Length: 619
Image (cartoon, rainbow, N blue to C red; front, side):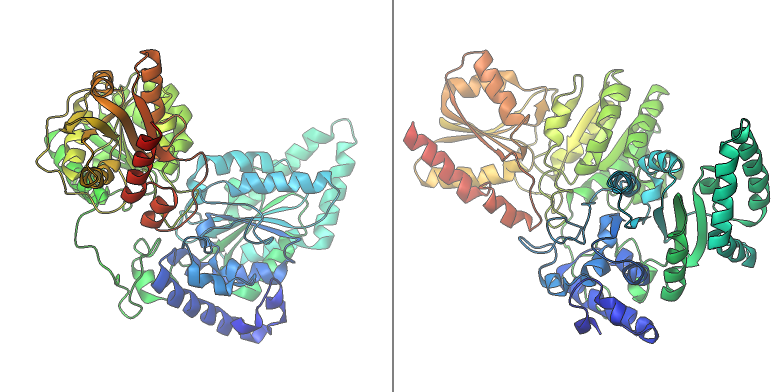
């Protein structure tokens, strides 16, 4: 049946009796493709029938679906004619794992981070109304996205709407009240019937025209709410002024098509509560939803990775060190924003459950919560991915750094992360953090230095950030392990002519660059910067005095990064040394393997060495 779906709306030609078979075919397709490419499997298996119902009920691309989080949109891509794109899913120049407006007119809004869909949908509704159009706008929010505070800000504003806006809550494991019986379905049908809605709107309009109409309307709503509290789940939404429908079985296509039709009749914001099972149809994903949230390539029969890791990554090192720190210091506490597995804090949670806090997808709250813990005498470590931490910039500045509180930011997935693309590349943290006074920013060259930096940061009396990359923890340069000294870098090799000043993950690349330059007959020093802030000015002065060319190397955008800080210092001190900045250009980096992206950005060892030698020729 998938061969019959070549473009959007083709699903409408599938007979109702075939819906279950089509859902099974879609699931098998997703399992087969993602087992090869990797990707977000569990959330997509759970949203198959929901997506089918939306495409049956709507007319795309005129009607709009905003996906939140966007990683649950694979079936949507499949039903809009992008089946062949799954061969290159999340590969360089291939199909994105998230909705992309540039990829299809059926993708109306790019969503890589969570909790944004209701705000975006509300904006589209207002644009529609201002233009006098009548298309349907649906925001699909799920997979934990409703734990983000921005969603509630948007709900608060959506409650004032007097035109249709549908919010579908894809509830695959959230603590929202269950259906209490047949009365809920009965009331849903009555409250969305044309005669009821017309009568309700007519009475409200008539009352508004009277002198005391508003107070009478409030009284009616209070009485009505008192009755509804007894029989309707979702009163949170009803009390906000948002009509609530459901819960509805998210794996029953016909039931969802019906409720979407009912929701389209509501003159205002309406919440459709859909119950789904994450990983449905694939036993390993049903048993281990966290493992198959973002899956690496796997064996379909067993569900096990086809290329299992044999060496620890930086997240593993962080996990081990955190457990040791928790044992040594009872004031150490750990905070994550819905990523206990991804950040490596699951073991800390198991060992010290009272000192572990998962706040949901709420990075802003996580940071201010940590500030409160620090003000109360604790030593909080906030573990958040680099691209997610940028959502809490204001809280880092105002609530942590202005007060000088000892909060440690463990910034995972810093630098290029690969397959998740623009929204997940951790290439801005050095820039946005460096602009904040009072924060210390470090980056380890290898796994042992990550351990040393964490120990240093927990003891430091002020805000500290440690950024480290995704992937295997570098084990080289073990013999170079001088104690961490505040604001001081580490000279690994000290020679003349060229000085490589490398930050964190780029030390490994710099080591390879140095080997190439040495074979070409050049003399080359290598410095492990360690601290991006404060800048080791003494090191820069020494490097400028003893070398013809300073090469700064960082896995961060050039604008506002380490290289700019070094160049600014050279200018301020009127130091004559030439500088070459190796950094990511002022652009968003698409999805693809980290190795390939580095080559494209001319940041791999061969490219960097070639750029250095070209610079020397020009001089």
